[in-house]
Length: 70
Image 1 (cartoon, rainbow, N blue to C red):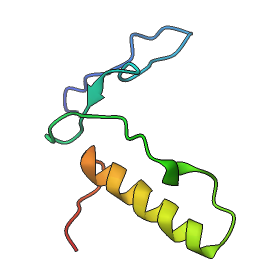
Image 2: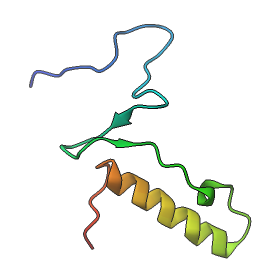
Image 3: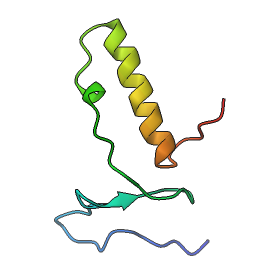
Image 4: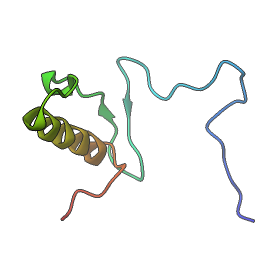
């Protein structure tokens, strides 16, 4: 079995990644700050669902959680 490193300290209170003013990155990407954008509001119709999906995709690509190439 490979050596596994855990981010958590095992505290019953849980683990937080990043502070409100901090930056994080995954899979070797440069750390980025949390996105602040009005298009993160709840989707109420088809057009806002598309806007929200695109914003979620952009945030995941920026943090390295998914690959941005098509």
